[in-house]
Image (cartoon, rainbow, N blue to C red; front, top):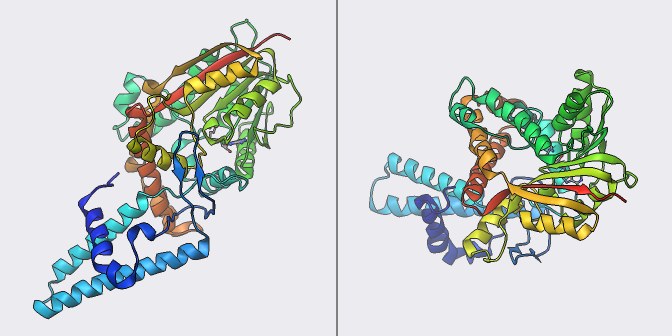
Length: 421
Ligand code: SAH
């Protein structure tokens, strides 16, 4: 992320030194704004002390965008007129200045998270509805919205333009196989007959498990996104699978009776939960005695040591870009499992080494095959805006990679069995 690039400094200097005195604005007085769904929220403090700043309304935001654009053009005009007084205008210099300004604005905007979780607004469902409708995520990621499991040859193929895309999708199936093995769901010798996929996306895992486990197993997937349910059901029909179904349902208030499922599976949905204990508790409630709970989820490192200011900044961006209320550590998930008083054989693992390559790999697949994104800029409802959104995704993917690489984030795997009654 080009946070501290020279262009950004030029931009800051321009606003604080050239524009500010005349207009009474300071850079810090300008509100946050974003590119995603517009949200309004009050200032809150995260569990580990990260302050979340208030966002403004759509109209206020538009007003500020136009104020800022006005300021920017004022600045250019002032610079141009200063130049005109003392020397002939050199078009190359003007062009270079305009480029620097544009890059600075882009860097500034990209450094601000834009799609924050908002309690009571179904921001998560809306984000996934939009991704499903756009189709870009499905084009690159296939049926799965989770990281892949990488071995040596997969890593070597990331930069292979011919194989990269296929390998990217294969690693996701490998991940499911590894997660299933690791869960120990068949340790007692029986395969699970009733499976719940909590936060199922467009149902890639549900369908894969339905096929793998066979017709006598019934898989149910739940999500907050109606578009995902529709797409997941469509794909199940296309594949002729009748042992899988999808519902819009909140994982924190599930409609299933107690003790319903043999296997409860949560893959990369925990990161979106505003109440992580309730998430674990609800999954435990619907699990049959003797049944298996398995969770894969992005976690932040355990504290203490407390987060530094720089770590808090990084986390804040990751929380607020893809509708994550906050993350917790693997150890905290294990403590939550213990706290239910109903789980045993609880254990956790960090699969960061196995999965970290997925972040940059997803950027590479776009580099090798960018055409769908270019095309969508001309054909989608939002037009060229989609290009900006994709640039934001790339920045976030890279930031995720760095956070996992540095140990700030960990890839949490948690498994447990429900005690016999
Ligand atoms: N497990 C899926 C997709 C992970 S993306 C896969 O393997 O492809 C995260 C999913 O979690 C999305 O479908 C989102 O709608 C779902 N989710 C997030 N919060 C949820 C909640 N409170 N209840 C149900 N689903 C939720």
